Image (cartoon, rainbow, N blue to C red; front, side):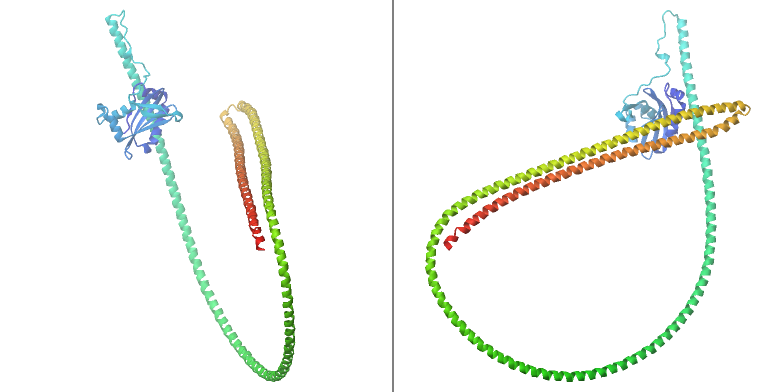
Length: 580
């Protein structure tokens, strides 16, 4: 059910000004009817300076009413939705709407539709608290005051009748315009429907033709499949026959091979028996020879054993003689050693007495030296203290020198890095400028080329028109045919030239886009290199701090070790003198 309701002074003007836009709006609304629901109401409304066709869609599945305002000037659509519950709540606010007249409810909502601005997003359709004002296109005479000065009663009555007739004529004209617009809208709607029916019929015919073609293809494929199956069956029978024949031949060959193998095995068995017999004979001969050799070897060993026993007895006699001689010599040696030991003991006692006297003298001398050593020890400890202080100062100066060298190297490294970064930045900038200059030069060349092409096209077009005029003068009787025969190649050539120019422009745009992407990649790589260099410098600073801390720790450790060594030297030297 579709209801059309156009308020006076609004819908009629919309129908008169832009009937094609109104039809487009209806078509647009119907195309979206599947999403919004069923079209229940349609009317016109003027909001501000623009005219809109307001449609109401009812979606039963979602239980939502959608009010859609279609703008006739720019073909834009604005929607606002109300759930059934919210719509009933709005209608309950007015006692006159508590009826089953849905069109009155829809009209009540339409009268209060308005737009609010959403900033950069444009405008949004909302529901106002009061009906939005509408400006009538045709002024009404009801609001004018009827002139009554210097007029009698008859003139006033005649003037009133003329004003009433004017209102009737205005209402009639408005009705006729609205009816004319409605008929035009319905005629165009019917035409569109007829076109859609023709399209649907053509589409159905095309579908049927495709189905028939597909059925023919399926039948042909089925026939091919059957023929292929028959060929496969025939080939299968031939193959089975050939297989049976080959199986028989193979069986015959196998039986012949088995017989040959059995004969070969019998022959090999005979040869093997002969070889075994020969091996047995050879083994018996070898065993007999071995026994004879063993007997001869036994006799030879017995002779050797007798000779060895004789040699052992002689060697034992010689050993016993040498042992007797050794014992006598050993006895003489021990007696001489005992004599020497006694003499040595005597010399040792004499030496001990001499040493005791010497030690007493040395003890007295040592006591005097200890007193002198105590004095020297104090001086030595003080000298070592001064030496430790000097070593600490030298170590500190050495560490400060190392720090200064390290800071100098880091400063030089940072300076070289900064110079490299600046040089690379200058190189990148120069390359970017050169690329931009090349791109600009290419664009200028492209612009000049386009200008030259346009100039040549203009000259060619001028010559073409002169040629057409000449042909028209020569063939005035068949002008239409002559024009048709000369326009088609020229139009095709112009179209091809336009396509080539468009392709060239697209290529130029692609080259510009590639240049832009290349610049972005260069900048990204530069940023990555800068970040990596910053991280490397941070790592170097951290390593330098770690080395500095390590040097401080080593300095402290050396100082403690020197102090501990001095204490140990003092502790070791102090008790050494009394112990001696």
